[in-house]
Length: 330
Ligand code: UT7
Image (cartoon, rainbow, N blue to C red; front, side, top):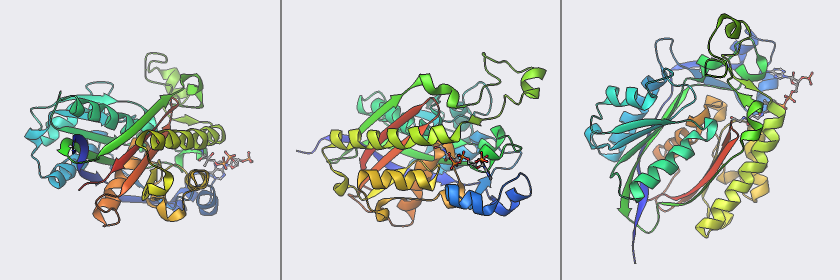
């Protein structure tokens, strides 16, 4: 018998127009196109305009997702925005997006789980729809990472880019939709990936600015190891919960941080390269936005077909991680 499940009924994304190539970065820091490409797989990334804030990117992605779902902004009951680059300390970026798109009936808040942010926000949105607390949830992942990059630090500035994506959730009379999920965190490893300044631990001061504490810091090699292990385990857990095996999965959309990480996950899960969705060559690591931007891309270019089963898997600062199995029913 068919039961109601929560489905993604629309997606959208927005990439800023400005392309920053590896060759341009060669002129900014001591790096090379060859190093970036072979160590990460990234060729170029998008950079938002100075006058664009995260909510501007998120609002555009949200409009596109609502159009895709055939809904109006007034139909949205909740906006959940995943971001580590909020417009301001407060109000939350979800409220700024609400105002821009005219979603006057929604309540709005942010979820901060770094690169796992979209999957965490999806989990919260799914729960709200599943319990009947809301009919329509708009999950947005938006990042202006360029605003928190140290453009003198070659360890980080070559890796990231700006982007936003959005998904609309509703309950549907379908066999499957969002089939299974698993989430985890480990706060003991927070120091390996963080933006220390500007919060209550190190409030903004002349000293924090001098110490460059308002920029992202990352111990790349350490993060790499944990990223692979946790994403493989999360994938296995979500697959077990869904009752599927890797052979049932048509598409794997891993967080786009490093092609070597993506390939290692594919290998350890026993999945062929034809299942792995990769777009980090064009956009770099856009933190919370990577997975929903890639999902929107394969939905729009026709690669994603009705009833395809998709594994979404993320890892990020916190540490945080998560995996979600979805049967596409659009
Ligand atoms: O999104 C959240 C999760 N984040 C991630 O998953 C990122 C995970 N980490 C990574 O993707 C990789 O660790 C990096 C791409 C960040 C670094 O690659 P790596 O192969 O782990 O390199 P490394 O950090 O071990 O550095 C190797 C060398 C070092 O030089 P020495 O010490 O061997 O002389 C670095 O200083 O490469 C040097 N290096 C660079 N050289 C040219 C680091 N960044 C650069 C650069 N250009 N941009």
